[in-house]
Length: 235
Image (cartoon, rainbow, N blue to C red; front, side):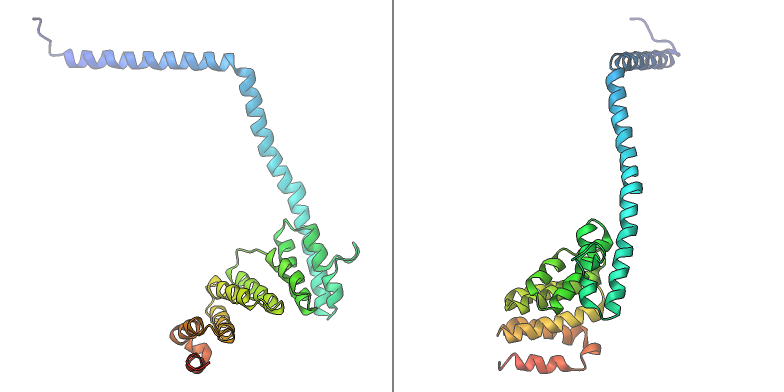
């Protein structure tokens, strides 16, 4: 049997390296042939992708940005009317000349300002005693702001109470009590949920809410939670 020389391992590694680069050359050649063969199709795909990206940025620049500007103008005009005590004009929605919160939402519902307009319009509808319309508008509001979401659920609960649907109101108040990281907001809606639960004779739930206040929010409650906890034993 022939013996391997001292340089055999190096020779073997050299052969493997050569084979490796040959394989790379073959792959590169295959890739070139693939591109050459399908250059037209690849060009179309690339063109579609480029158009898609350009279209997205064009949409953001020429559609969304101007809409945001107009929505803000419309919202501020409605807010000025509300500050002046002109609630009907602030609500608007009856003419293009005075869109108000309602018209701003209808026209720019895809913008954050449009969604905030739905919230304000909902509050004004509630003030008019139109509870279902108020609820529907409030339901269309959404935000990344947790405190605003808590206020939304609380206002929706008030609308449900106005419709004599207090069980649904309690469910919404429960959402409101857990939606925010703000301690006072959490306390306020937890207390409100407890009072509604007590009115519905749901004493176990009422005690849960007031006990949470007694444990976490005594600074805001001035000891009132103790009285409410006692009430759950007798009412």
